[in-house]
Length: 136
Image (cartoon, helix red, strand yellow):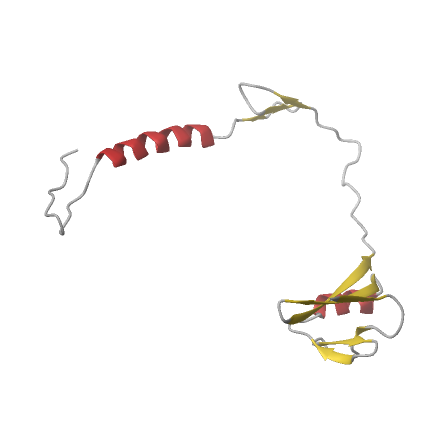
């Protein structure tokens, strides 16, 4: 059960961050604040394209499809370029001479495997069966 509104009076309620306005339903309170979306709409950097109302698990959900205008910052130095050489002995070598080492997770896995085997050979004291702890 769902319904999508693309025309009509829908959007955020005026002056309130906890209510949305839907056609035919009127103003409906939301569980979450719509503060961030309201700020974008007020600044003019966002436009609400559609609202979808769905019923799932005994609850009603309202989701907005929003078109946001983004201005990514320009790179500080667009002429500077770094070459990267991917290798086997090291993960990467940059053209600046910096060497990035391989991740250490393989070495940690070896240690963990050895310690897991060591722990599995041990057994602790058991009160129920009066078993003594191992001497390992």
